[in-house]
Length: 315
Image 1 (cartoon, rainbow, N blue to C red):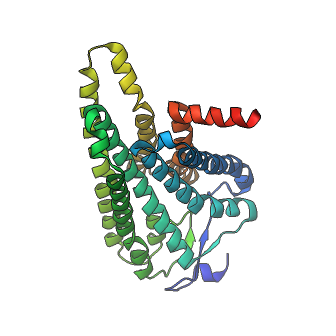
Image 2 (tube, helix red, strand yellow):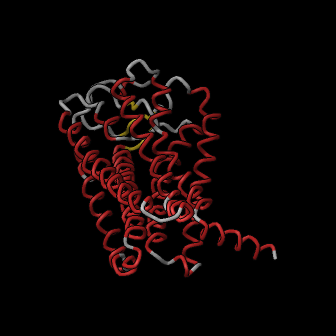
């Protein structure tokens, strides 16, 4: 490694992303599942957008929120995967300082936006099940648009301080990031300064976004379950619960890995760095791939339209 990576500097022009430390020799093989995940995420989310746009019967709040989720997943996966694959395939480890901060912003912004969309979808399920006769008057198209705009503004504003905080610190030890992404704490941990402001702000965002969204989702589903169990017949309970089953499953795949990773950060000091990096990326990589699969398979209207599309093309 050149001296410029370890000698004193305060404004590095580039950072060096190591990929997965200790597994550099296997980067090409590791890239295969990641490339597959990226391809599935792109194809699946574009398919969701295409089907919803093409089918007028799907022009409703649930599917509008699903389209918001698909766009978020497309932006998030495109922010992450191309640079990561260039590291694995071409050993292209350098990333411009400004590009690193831009990637940081988009990752944190759209990860938070995904959480907000899940909360909005929980609201849609709550209104549909607990107040079915008022669903069309409560969640009108203008209201859905305002909810989407509010999520964009909230996440965009909360993520904005991340690159500004990272830019203000002096970097006088190294510019080597021991992973393949420019996450906020991964960058500011390289600074030779007291970074408690960055750390505390990161905790604040986690609580104000993931924490509050999680609480809202839990409260919504408590009300939903109470309404479901009050239904007179078992068939009605199963059918009603099935309408929110895919959403609940997606929420679990989004929040459970984050909880596991937070526990790993706190109690997993003896875990190997490469294993830690791989596990900690699950919560970023999996949702963009799984969301369209889960909704495509478990949402009958989307699945039926997809089958009709393929049947029509073959005919």
